[in-house]
Image (tube, rainbow, N blue to C red; front, side, top):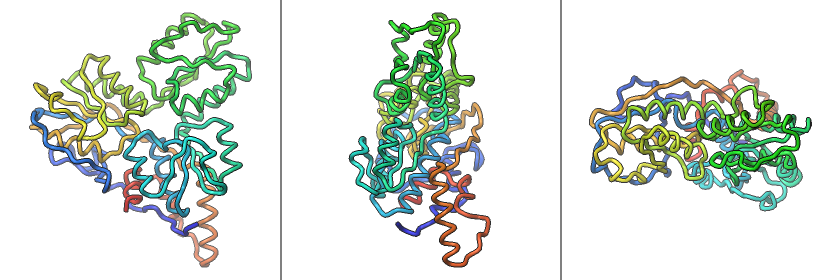
Length: 394
């Protein structure tokens, strides 16, 4: 174990970098600075749009912030390799940055050597996977998003009361697998595109409906309406299962699409919420494409296009968005298309907070140092995922 404590105690000014064509004052956008080694070379566009809108909010959500910072802490505390069950978030640039820092991503706990530290991904894991990890690893940190945990609790509670549970999600997605494992004999996975189909509950009066947090709003609403019509006593969460970040980003895209000829969504192919943003824009009737980075943009998409809208999935790094804005080179610059503000904050996972507190306290005792009240955990609110990844790359 290494006694390397702070990841970074800088403020958030690093994430307040405007494009040369931007029209907002400093601090109005949270776009981050470049992260070395993570960008891709891109040429200038053959067809320059007149104007570019950047959706606000877009990009990293509170759950992704928490998960990335937690895994950065793991790389600072422990000697490599640090293991992570499944990709920490669904973005290949983030995953590759961690791989360069000595993180090994595995799809089976059996691939984790005995006694090493392991982190569980933000999408949530099955109970058996968690128990197997606890028996095998030296320390287990579960970085599951709190909003996913909420659905896990709801599923277990309704299953215990004898409900048949409809779970709307994508088969094979990490979140769907982790949630279905909470009550496998009482749950039926429904793909949003197919609807309820031949689903028949044991008791039509005891049916519950829950959803993957990253679905498209229009997809969830369609299944929810169908289920409500078929089962008048349908039970759902008191608050929508779709996470605030999913909903906010889709609402921003819906509003922005009305003003744009083209929507570009930054994010990886295996990111559910990124793909949902593409589908949301197309539902509005606006052409939309998912891109990994600026290098993925096709010149043909821009032919005859005057206004381009840019957004990003909840796990897409800020520097990739910045590169897209720079690459597009809009004649009149880029402008924020603000729909709402986000100020949600999720603290580091409980197990990691406890471990860090004990570790820091032991060091203070060993050096007869007195706590100054400004420990690493107090700084966590100020540190962005962009800051943490920059420290990781450094």
